[in-house]
Length: 209
Image (cartoon, rainbow, N blue to C red):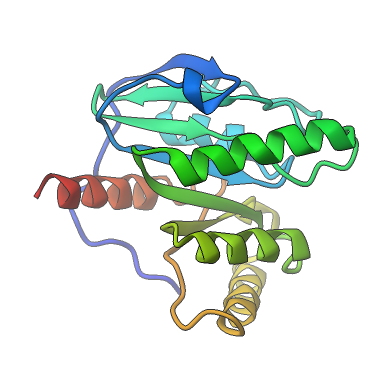
């Protein structure tokens, strides 16, 4: 199993929505670290952000995939941002809309000066999906720092969770020499919340040094 980060627990005392940006040029200008979250549509991104911040309705959740169409900024502890990026891979949108979202995502990832780390969310119940693996490969081409978050772990037994994670790691090792940080989460049961907060806290400390 993956080791817990053995540091004093980090916490969130405040978190609020700042703005939704239809374009990178419209994003807030600041000098704080940004931690962006992305994944296929319906992976549980909004639920994870709400679980992480301890606010049930901070990020809007929906039973309909593909609802996030802009870049959403949330200010946390007046010290860093959560950035909620549009999901990718939702087939029931038009080709034009998918191209617009793909360009919006790429522009943020390649040009944001404040993005510290990208969290890529994947549904632990599924076998490694080609669209996720392709997106992760593109991150390597762009030389962007990222970590993997497996969502919905409460839907599987602990043995099945570990088996799925190991399979994913093996697939990544076919193309990567070193694996990214990995987190196992469940928004429903708050699994992985403290590990994620600790990791973000550690990263922020390293930035300040």
